Structure formats: C-alpha cells, structure tokens
Amino acid sequence: MQYKAFMIKYAEIGTKGKNRYIFEDILCKNINRKLKSLGDFYIRKEQGRIFIEAKSEYDYEDTVSALTKVFGIVGICPVIVEEDTSFETIRDRVIEYVDKAYDRKNFTFKVNTRRNDKSYPMTSMEVNAELGHFLLEAYEGLAVDVHAPQEIINVEIRKVVYIYSINIPGPGGLPVGTNGKAMALLSGGIDSPVATYMIAKRGVEMEAVYFHAPPFTSEQAKQKVIDLAGIVADYSGAIRLHVVNFADIQMAIYDNCPHEELTIIMKRYMIKIAEKLAAINDCQCTVTGESIGQVSSQTVHSLYVINEVSTMPVFRPCIGMDKQEIVDIAEKIGTYETSIQPYEDCCTTFVAKHPVTKPILSAIYKSESKLEGFIDEMLERAVETAETVMCRCR
Ligand code: ATP
Ligand code: MG
Image 1 (cartoon, rainbow, N blue to C red):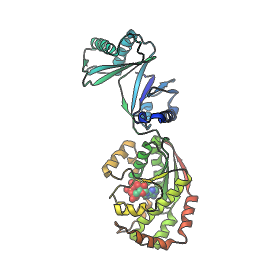
Image 2 (spheres, rainbow, N blue to C red):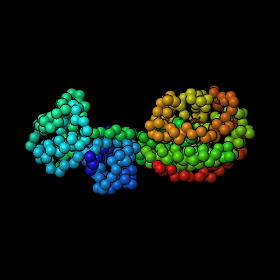
Image 3 (cartoon, helix red, strand yellow):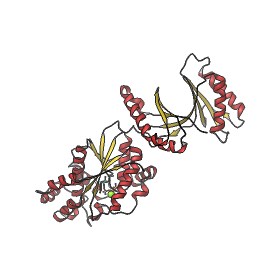
Image 4 (cartoon, protein in one colour):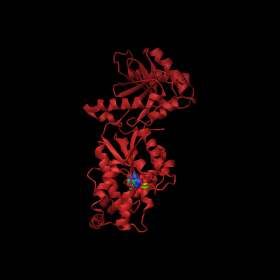
C-alpha cells in the first residue's frame, strides 16, 4: 500500500512546557532536511503530533529508514488520511486499510477511536464497537481482544480522519540543535563514534577532532575517521571534523617524558587541544569514548589525571558500559564494520610496554615540565594548522 502521510510521535519533547514549540520546530526542520532528497513532503505540527504528507512519489522504505535516524522521533506511523468524516466512509476506509496493511488477517485487535470534534454524532465507544463489528464481519480470522490485542487500529477523528495501526520505532532522544554543541574526540576505534552518536542523541550538535600523526599513522587511518564521522552524521547531521597534526607533539613527549607515562600525557594534550578547538567553534563541552577499566589509560586513576587538564565538561557516555554493550550500539548504528578495519592509531603507535595504570599527578607535572618553553607554541600551531573536513552522510 502506498501511504500518502506519516504521523510522527515524539515523547520527551512533550514534557518541555512553554519551550515545547522550540523543540517541535527544530524537529520539523530536521525531518525536512532529512527527507529533502527523497521527495516533496509537507511537514506540519498539529496538537502534539507532526504530520508528514507526501506531495510527490517517494520510496517508502527509504523514507522510513531516513526517519528512523532523526533524533526526537519515537514512533513513525504510516497513516491513511480521509477527508470525509462520515461513519460510512470511515468504515469502508478501515476495512480497506486492514486489507492492504496486513497480508495475514488472523490477529487479535481492538479499535481505538479518538474524537477531537466532540460534536461528532457518535461517541468514541460507539465508533469502536461499530468498527469492531464490521471488521469481524469482513475478515474471518480476526478476533477482538480489548485487553491485550496484537494490533490496535487507531482512528482519530479531527477535521479529517486518520487511520493507522503500524508504529515503527524511532531512535528516541531529542532533536539535534536543541542543546548546545560538543567537540568529540573521534578516533578510528569502536567507542568514540558510539559516544558521538549518544551525545548527538540528546540533541547536541557535534563537531569532532581527530589527532593524526603522519607518517606514523596513514592516510587510510584518517579516511577511516572521516568515514566514521559520515556514518554518525547520518543521525547527527553534518559533522565538521578537525584533523590535527599531532606528530610533532607526540615526538616531543616521546623524546622528553618517561615512556610509561606517554599515553597519559598525550591524552592530556589531546584534551587541551580539543578544548581550544571547542572554544573557537562555540562548543561547550568535549566528548570521549572512554570506559572505566578498558585500557591502562582508562583506569579511574588515569581518568583522574587526564581529566585534570579540562576546563569544560568532558562527556563520556560509554563510561559505565561493557565492551559488548558498546559493540552492540556500534553494530546498530552501522559504525562497527568500519571501526574494526585494522588501521593504526596514534595512541597505539607510541604505546609503552608497561604503561602506568596509577599515574600520580605530581609525577606527571614533573614529566611535563620537560616540555616547558616550547609545548604551548606547539599546541597553538596544532590548532592553527588543523585541517577541516565536512563529513556528511554518504
Ligand atoms: P576508541 O574505540 O574510541 O578508539 P579506545 O578504546 O581505543 O577508544 P583510547 O585509544 O584509549 O581508547 O582512547 C580513548 C578516547 O580518547 C577515545 O575514545 C577518543 O575519544 C580519544 N582518542 C584517542 N585517540 C584519539 C585520536 N587519535 N584522535 C581523537 N581522539 C582520540
Ligand atoms: Mg582508540
């Protein structure tokens, strides 16, 4: 069946009180942007719902798939819109709808009618009972179950009538653009793309920074990060990726500091650079893919020492997750296959044999003092020479 409209359900936005319209408007704008290349759609708000009407031919699967990537949406209901609100027409349309929407007509159901127009000559209960009766008559395999029906046939009588029963889950969250901007530290691994996705899901616009260390890390490693940003951008909207050349800084640390502290010191400078880029680009926070205990630089002691340089909130949405839980999300959002491509990361290139797991801040200060006099300038240069790549979904 070719549906001409979709009803979009959203949950959390409904709790926003006076500001609700701001969230709704941004959601409409994001839907519009997402569907632009798929057809001509008219999007409007109506009493806690968003309606999308197709004004041209469109591909159903592609459209639904695009909508499942718009944060803020909890349900996508393909809907029949009927302008004639007379009971007879509703009855015919509902019977026809069930015929087309279900290949096998052997399920339990109930009809759930809502009347917006209280002057309608029948009550909701009467419409439910009558429609139930006609459906049972039309299809032998159907049975009514008002307590635990397999399908709920919804009939909303407003200025027009809406008929729907299919509710395709959306991604949830809040519309991107409703809650500030973040700078994600995006490496080519499994965790940071998931972290980026999770913060975008809360409505935060995303930029990202990748620390590239040529010739120790290859162009393929960089391309992989660009690809990952593109996959996440399918949900978050375009991501501006700042590619920072980190090689000189890494070499300076390597030449001057104890090797077992290398990763910790590197991470501290990464956060410093990320915060500089965040400030320039109007971001209020940074995001990493760290998870407690995953590697030596992610013990609580290490995180304490790394975090110490930060002046902005560092969001770590994977912090309490097991690896498998992160992998599950990576698979769901489509980053996993790209993340496991075996390209080197700047952190692994310089990894020490026995990295510290309980770094001591005063010792780190002492090691970093070896870089005094030139490191600040190197950080500035790294920021100034960062290359910007606009990553959009493919
Ligand atoms: P991921 O799977 O995200 O690569 P990881 O388990 O490999 O994480 P680490 O390499 O210790 O963990 O990095 C921890 C976090 O530091 C990453 O999740 C990421 O946010 C950031 N990070 C590490 N390396 C880089 C890099 N080269 N560029 C940008 N961010 C990085
Ligand atoms: Mg990594």
